[in-house]
Image 1 (tube, rainbow, N blue to C red):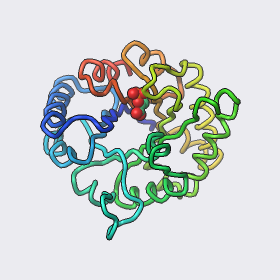
Image 2 (cartoon, rainbow, N blue to C red):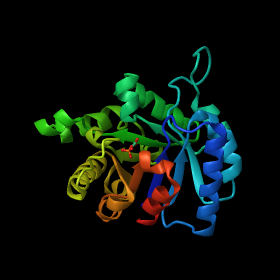
Image 3 (cartoon, rainbow, N blue to C red):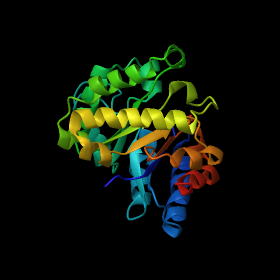
Image 4 (cartoon, rainbow, N blue to C red):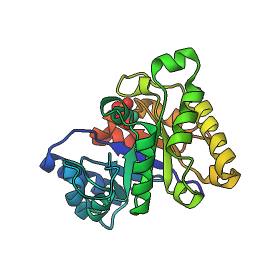
Length: 251
Ligand code: PEP
């Protein structure tokens, strides 16, 4: 059964007290008005343990935005999937374009992170998407296929079923440019077809595929209405309660 999800990616925003206060407000909101979609907050590492206490027993799940590619040991500054799980999170974003671009994370490392995260009990929100010149050159379908084949498709099916794919055209992230609902739909269908080719039709039909890239209350409803769009990964608009809750409610 395919699950609808709206996940907020706070990125590197909000100090500890501010983030926990915001998590409390969202927890209270979605307790009073349970959403039709699963709601996930992907916070910076510093918020995880406190936010997990706040969100426990409510309707909002918690995620991290990155994890280490090694299980433990001498990796200064890194945070392992086991640590993230022990802090109370259930999800981790892997392969966000900001990680691919600024920290040079390639498909091989993203595959290692994904595998380790799943082995440690986390669900993975795996991001893929093309940059502007790739779309202009018409290679966007091939780019996304390579990201999925190299980053995900060597997982066995039971592990792959712990993955949510987020299609995020890089040219639409934080730019105010949004893919049209038709552009989102055709890429989501492409992704689902690739998943069906690798894991079979039933697995592809069960797969949650999110759209991300300048999603806001004014465009979410139309994008989410497309048959292969199962929700969103929301950056900037997840930092404002009114915007984020309106996006969740447009599912
Ligand atoms: C994101 O960071 O995943 C994202 C989609 O950002 P924004 O919504 O700000 O474009």
